[in-house]
Image (cartoon, rainbow, N blue to C red):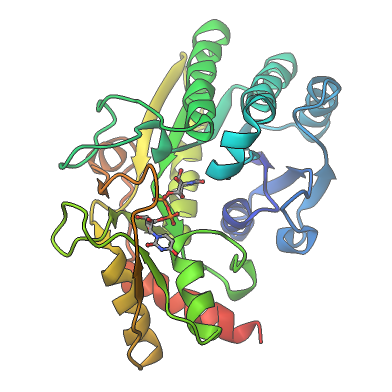
Amino acid sequence: MTVVVTGGAGYIGAHVVRLLAARGERVVVVDDLSSGRAERVGDARLEVMDLAADVAVDRLAALLVEVGAHAVVHLAARKRVDESLTRPTWYYRQNVGGTANVLEAMHQAEVPALVFSSSAAVYGAAGAGLVTEDSPTSPMNPYGETKLAGEWLVRDAARAWGMRCLSLRYFNVAGAGWDDLHDPAALNLVPLVLGRIRAGLPPLVFGADHPTTDGTCIRDYVHVLDLAEAHVAALDHVAPPDGGSGDHAEVLNVGTGVGSSVLEVIGAFASAIGSPVVPEVLGRRAGDPPQVVASVDRAADVLGWRAARDLADIVQSTVAAELAAR
Ligand code: WQD
C-alpha cells in the first residue's frame, strides 16, 4: 500500500511514518516543515508543501497520482490553543482550508481513503464521566472548532464522493516510541514537567482546587506509539486490501480510558527518575475542564485497537529520550 502522510515530519506523524515503513508500506510525507523536521522521516520521500496554499490542490493531486496513493493520513495542522485565540482566521485557513484542499486533491486523484487527525478538543468541557463519541461537541477555542469543522468536511466529502474516512479524536498524547522522535519542545504537561525538573525548578500545577480526587485536573494520557498504532489500524479499516465498498465516515476516540491527575503525572516522573519532585501549585488556568477521559470501546469495536501502554510507560520513554538526546 502507498500512503501519503501529511504532517509526517511532526512528532505524531513521524511515529506513524516509522510504523508504516516498518510494516513495509510505501510512505510519502507532505509537510511544510514549519514545526516538522526533515530528519524525522527517515527514508520516506518528503515533499515540502503548504497545504493551505491555493496551489496545494493541484500540487497534491499530482503527487497522489504520481505515487499511486491508496490512502491519505492527514495530520498536518496548527495545534496551539493559545495561538488559535489570537490568530483565529489563520487557524481556520490553515486547518479547515488545508483539510478542504486535501479532500479536493483526493477527489481529483481518486484516492478513496482517509484517516484524519482530530482532537478531544472538539468536546470542550466534558462532564464527570467518560467522554463517548456521542457526547456533545462544544469546543472552547478556535483550535477545537477547526478540528470539529474538519470532521464535518471529512464526513461531507465521504458522502459526496464515496470515500472511506475515519477521524481520530486524540486525547493527551505524550511519550516517545523512539528516542529521536521525542518532542521536547511541546508545550504540554509531560514535556513541561521534565523541562522544569531538568532546569532545577519545581513543576507547575495549574490549580489544586478542582472538583477531583486530589484537586488537580484529570486527563487521559495516551502513548504516542499507541496512537500511531491506532492510525495503522484505522488505515487497514478504511483501505482494506479489497478496497472496501461504499462511503463511510466515523469518529473514534483515541485514549486509554484511564484518567491521571496532574499530581499523578508528576509522581510518575519522581518514580522514573528515582528522586522526589516537589511541585509548585499556582491558580487555575483559564478554560481548563477538571476532567477529560475517553471512553475507548468504540475504537476497540471498530478497529480492534486498544492502548497497550500506561502513564509509567509514557513518562519512562520521555525520560529515556531526553537522556539519549544529551
Ligand atoms: C494538561 C493538564 C493543565 C502544564 C491541550 C489542548 C488539547 C490538545 C492537547 C492538541 C491541564 C495542567 C499543564 C503545566 C499543569 N491539543 N498543566 N502544569 O490542556 O489537556 O490539552 O493539549 O493538539 O486540545 O487543549 O493539555 O498538557 O496543556 O495540560 O498543571 O505546567 O496539565 O492545567 O489540566 P490540555 P496540557
